[in-house]
Amino acid sequence: QERPELKLSSHGRKMAKFRRPALEIEGLVATSGLSLLIACSLDTGDRGLMYAFVERWHKETSSFHLLIGEVTITLDDIASLLHLPIVGAFHSFEQLHVDDAVDMLVELLEVNVLEVRAETIQCHGSYVRLSWLRDIYEMKIEACHWIVAARAYLLHLLGCTLFANKSVTHVHVVFLDALCDLTQSGTYAWGAAALVHVYDNLNEVSKSMARQLAGYITLLQVSSHVNKT
Image (cartoon, rainbow, N blue to C red; front, top):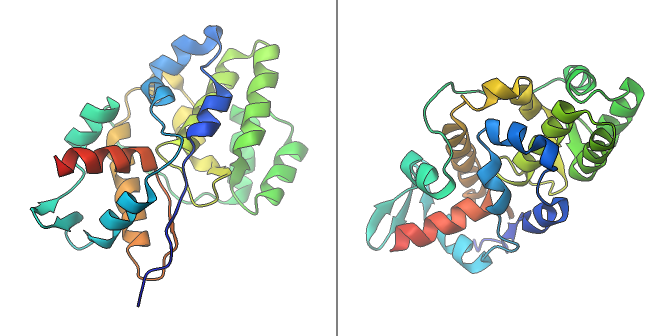
């Protein structure tokens, strides 16, 4: 059975819209170890290239089966391409109940509980909209709440890059947990978490009737070019 046309979720334009972080929080963003992701998102993805690689993905070996042999995306690839740490504490992100998501948002983004509940209801679960995060960020910058503004900025960054999902517009609140202590965030093995997410999304889309590839499309596209050479 022929695979349906593949849809890609690319967030390069969203990152361009958000711009670089305000000068007052640049240090906090850099401390997280994620700041290099700000300028690492393509505006569009190469659908044909991604289709070809998805067709050749084998989840049993976590690799692409090509004419030249088996190739895969490795931790070294992520470290060299994205300059993300691949050693350190591994932060596992478990499913989050919506009530816990609300509590986390109220505590870490300092938002009114009624507003937070309205947002999670609109998103049908433990998610918030990327556009909502941009609004929160602007409000916290105006109020000079730098740490909170940095958390909102970084959650938006993660939702547009490493942990992009099929919704295109939402990010899971659970990733905010890794931004509780920004001085600790830089000790996480973000590269390892990113690789797990890439594999999970490739495994999902490799199913014959899957129509959409989520995850960090920029990483997949650049890695595929590197592996082809």
